[in-house]
Length: 513
Image (cartoon, rainbow, N blue to C red; front, top):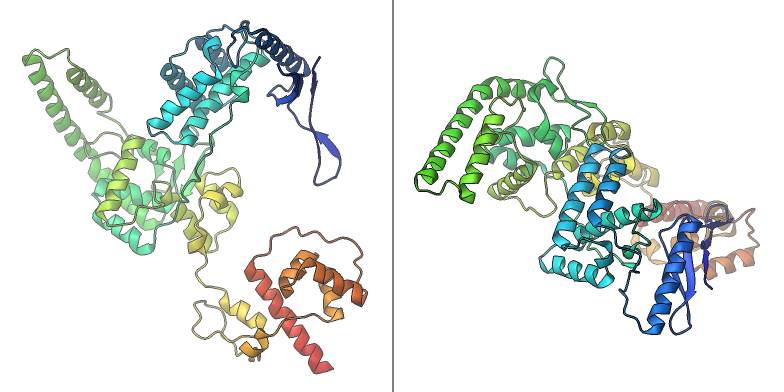
């Protein structure tokens, strides 16, 4: 008889023993060896059901009966029914955008797999489908996202004890290793000028608005003319458009405010003429297909769909439009952005539409705008998201503040980039000969450092091992009141500043002695 349990682990902060949320099961395989498997069950009775199912599998395997690798005969529910139940539950628990994303992925995955019942969803079938998707050129991340939402759908059925679902076949499927994403970068000032100077005016207005506001691609596409409040110089991002479902207000520069107002007044009659011309061309091509007896062809159906689309959006009030006067699609906007980068001879590596958001956040951070204001402007819930994905740190440090650091260290800073005061600073007296010798502390300096830093940091500071630091402390009788734990990661620049401070302290100690 097997067992169910939750694994234990020590809490790093409190040192207390805690248990993981999910249960694991332990049973004997067909060879009589104990096997431990993690599960996604968070309730004991569900884990016990999984254990009984696995033991039944082992017994049948031991008897030589053919069984699916990941299933038992008790599982025979229709995946379409599980999908409907899962989406009905998600609709009341997640945002509409997240719900639509789940629905789109599940519809495509179940249709593309060609599997109707859960009993057909074996590990072999899953691996076969995954390999086929990879052969089609799909990235491992996309495949993992497909499998993740499918796993959540089946786990929902297991947790709710829906008929025909005993266990989750995807619980034992291991996700693919993903290649790291290429980090976005911000446009350099000359690149931004070339981009804005070589693109058509209807896209130039989109790019300059994105650079000035940091708005998302979806927000740029769906923004309406009434969302632009020219009298107050701002743009309102409606809750239905914002990714987090929260309305926000983004102020814009005064000159851009005037350009957008002029754009609306001038473009409205022009976009209607463009759409009428496009509608005339579409109807002309459709008439040619019907005259040639091809009115029921796929090309003719596509033209009818396009005709309906033009008529539907004939009086649209979107702030921006494409070259034919119609509202932009998100995918088409990305395609045109990439074409404009090529036209402006800008290296596209690290650049997509949201690189314009990165550029906006980087400019704000470089110019000292508070983090809370940057977070609000970009529509993020936490500043960590802004720092992790939307600030190009390579462009934030422009060299400003060098005077303050030089003054602190006693250096002169000729040719500085910053606007700090250029007070006369006494020469530090440091030279290469002094720096070439090994840096070693005195007992007093070691005692002062030990009160503040752990041995690992002190070892980095003096370029010795932790063992050497412990020997120094034993030799000079240095004892800490309590153990020091490094709560911050000191960079090489931080260590360099500490070395400079220690050299100053050693010089003063030698002069006093």
